Amino acid sequence: MLLDNLSDLFQRGLEYAWDCEHVLLKQLPKMVEAADLQELKQALDLHLVETKGHLYRLEQIFARLDRSPAAEKNEPIRIIAEECDKMIGHIDRSALLDAALVFHANQIEQYEVGLYESLAGFARTLGLDEVAGLIDEILGEETSAGHQLTRLAQSSINRAAAGVHNTPPFALI
Image (cartoon, rainbow, N blue to C red; front, side, top):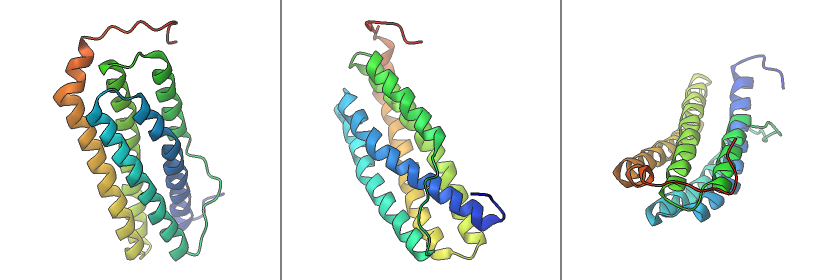
């Protein structure tokens, strides 16, 4: 899709968001399964539920705009998910793996916050205030998820991870 105007850029961004949330529908269950700390499992599981809601809101947005999502791939999120999968495969279940999960989840959250902030701004500029409101709802949940993960990491996970020495069967390259 060539970009000729702000509306085209907005459409591209919505497609990135659509793909991002679909990637997370697959990634978050793996992260929940890999997590050791129960509070981290719960936080990731809650975000999985929220992700389903994000997709519902995106469906509403596409319907209001009389558009449909194309097959635009969100490569940054796919790369972070791949790196997270490598860590899950190479780090024993421990506080160190929990720290790695938060590390990757926070990268995703920060990316999503930037994406949704931009989309909300585009929607307002294009006079799509109701759509901007739906995006703001998603943005609030993404921001909250990032803060919750950071609090978990700072309150317990990182300190516990500092005492872990991983013994994987092969080196992470």
